[in-house]
Image (cartoon, rainbow over all chains, first blue to last red; front, top):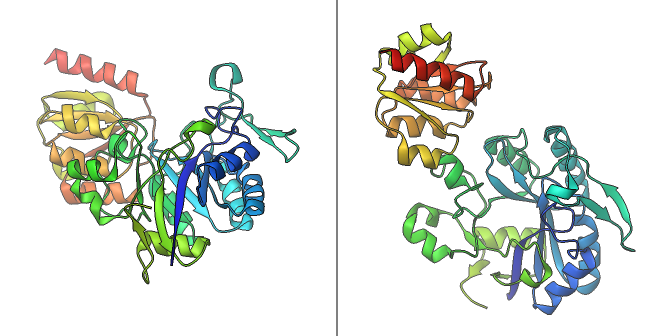
Length: 247
Length: 112
């Protein structure tokens, strides 16, 4: 077994709030500089920039979990990840069908662009990505798990757009692969207020919108090798894989 | 005033929780953050929201709210309907938006 450092909540320049310096190349080089082994690419309601980060990361030995930070109908932010590009494309269609037709104003919210390896803009998302989708948290969880993905309610300690702020408490049937506590708190601190979260694997991520923030907090995953399946097992604590306190 | 009076005066549709229709109304609260309703909802309040997740029934039950009005014709999740029957919390529906239905309810409660 080896221990890998993972920061699973990073926005690219595609997110309106993501700085334009959050290019795939910059994200990969900053993650390597911070000695991360795994990063998660999670733009608001879009997977469209994750693929290039994955490709650039793979060249450097950085494992990139690809997904999105979905805002559910209840306005609960949830991280989701899928294993391959076919699943990501299907999920992107599902998102496109469920994002409200509210247009982005780049002057107010920021640019929403996808770039290619040469850093040319190849796509501009016209619809505002930070709005709530028409997908309920229950529907999202079912979709993600039916397609073998990971479903992780984000920054549960925050006073807005979190499962606690929006839904008051953890729904009794919540089937989450982990819960994310933001870097404003820690899993230990927040579980003192809400001991019920200890029933789930707890992770903490940087939620980076700027390069310097990448890797400021991370998780230590003990597992056999860098793969989607191993990360899943580490979160679940299966066959000796686990989340370690330190690394 | 009872929930049945509110339903009649505001032209609401009863989605479920018929056994709670005789609940007494003490006032109302408007919020879409369930964490806020847990903190500020009062016993006997009618709660106006656009949320349809089943946790709304648990919050209403916890705070002994009289009923939940779901605005803009939003259809709550199936599980929400099921839980409201179980907990006898009336789930009421209106095509009005929050501002409009809250205004109507405010006037109705003032008249009492």
